[in-house]
Amino acid sequence: MNARFPQGHNGRVWLWGNITIGLIAIIICCIIGAMFGSVQISPETILKIILSKLLLTNSEATWSSSQEIIFWQIRLPRVLLAALVGICLSISGSLYQGVFRNPLADPYLIGVASGAGLGATIVFLLDITIESLSLTLNILPIAAFIGGILAVLIAYSISSLAQRPSITTIILSGVAIGAFCTAISSFLYLKSDPDLRPVMSWIMGGFIRATWNQVGLITIYFIPGFIVSMIYSRVLNTMQVESDHATSLGVNVKKTQRILIITATLLTAAAVSMSGIIGFVGLAAPHIARLVWGADHRILIPMSGLIGGAFLVISDLIARTIISPGELPVGIITAICGAPFFIFLLLKNKREIF
Image (cartoon, rainbow, N blue to C red; front, top):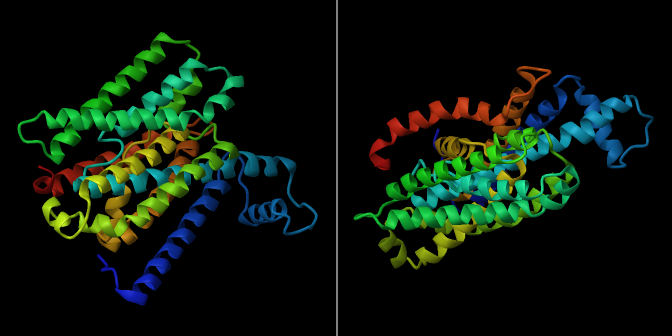
C-alpha cells in the first residue's frame, strides 16, 4: 500500500488518525518492553504503579517494592529513552533523505553519527569519573552536535573537490569521514584508562545506563527538532524536484537545506549522546513509512519517527533478554536487521543512487 495524502479537512483527519494509531502502537511496544526481563511484571501491575506515581489513585499497593523499583527506575526510563532515540534517528534520516534526495542518506552512513560520537567521546574521556558523569551529561549533546556538524561540513567540502559534485559523492565522503571518526574514537579508548567498559558499551549503542534525566534532556532537543521538521515538511516536498524548479516555485533551496541539515544533525547528536552509535534505524524506518504512507513528508516524518521508536524499543528488549542475564549492545541487533535491508535498498534503487 502506498497511500496518497488527501487534501483539505480529510487530509488533516487522515494525518492525525494515522499518527494516533502509531502512538498507540509505540505505547504497546513500550509496555511490552517494560514487562519482560529477569523479572516479569504484568500489564495490570504496570498500570497500577503508573497511576500511583501520577497520584491518580490512593489504593493500597499490591505489588512489591522491588517490582516498583525495577519498573519505575530501570525499565520505564529505558524504554522511553529507546523510543525517543529511535524517533530522533528516524526523523533525522527522513530529513537527510529528503534534503539529499537519496534513499541511502541517513545519520550513520553520511558520517554524522560517527562525528557526533567522536565529539561525545572526547567529552567522556576528558572527565570520566562517575561523580563528574552527571556534570558532563549536559555537555554531551553540544559536543555531539559540534562533531556531527563538522562531519557534514568536511564531507560536503571533500565532495565539492570532485569534478562533478553530486549527492553520491557527498554520501561517499560521509562514509569515509564516518570511518575516520570511528577510528579516532577507538584510538582514544585504547590510549586512555583501560577500565572503560561503561564507555565502550555506550559507543557500541545501548541503554543500560538510562535515567529519567536523560529522558528529560533528549525531550528538550526532540521537541524543537520535530516542530521545525513539520514546519518545513511542505517545503521539503517541493524540494524533491530539481533545485532550479524548486527555486522557480519560490523555495530558498540553500537556506532550507541548511536549516534542515542543522535540525537533523541536532536530533542525531541528541540521540547519539544518550545511546551511543546505533546504525540503520534512520535508514530503514523512513523507507518503511514511505512504502506504507507515501512520500509526502507531512506524514512521512511523524510516521518514520514512530516506526523507528517502536523498532528500537523492541530491538532493545531483544538485546537485553536474548542472552539473559547478560546483555548485547542494541547496535548489534539493529545491524543484524539493518544490513540486509541496506543491501536490498542498494539493489532496488541502484539507478536512483548512482
